[in-house]
Length: 281
Image (cartoon, helix red, strand yellow):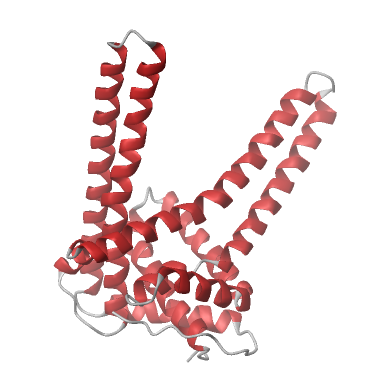
């Protein structure tokens, strides 16, 4: 699959029409015969692989914790237990990201009008080079997600810690408004982080959609495209968060049946429009 990302031209931003075009295109692709069923099956398969990793990681950590308990030296025992966490993390990046990226690639094939087989989800396991590329993409994406999440959670934890500290010295009618104001600042900070994440939001689409593009070049194009399209990507992310909230209200049923697939196809189509500088149609 080659989405043919190019450096976007300096055009006037078209926010809502492009998002509507991306969402509409994703709906049209999923409504084609067999596409929605294929995406649901691949989603369930990815969940199965992820769950298998969770079980294996827990067993590995428990085994090494049991071995560590038999070691009399505390420092060595602690090192053995930490080794279980490191091995489970390594196992995650070696097995889970290639499957999810294979699903993203399948969504790109559907977007391109092709009819991929279920086996295409194993694309990144077919050669060592593809597998290594998927592992590197997964590491970069994990870092991209980890930075804003850690910053956002740190802000909320700091606000709660500030309230706990002030509650010893101030009355509730003073401490509670300070807490509410702090939480509102945290929400604003979270929205700012979400806005800034648009700088690199398209990295996965570029890295997966252009298999011969070096990852450094894909990241550079993502940053350049994100810089030109921050408002569009921010509104798209907000809309996706709203869909996630709706999915949570149905205990994930909507996510499994529609939104999980609709998001990645619309994400790829929006990225293609932004990179090519296409106007919405």
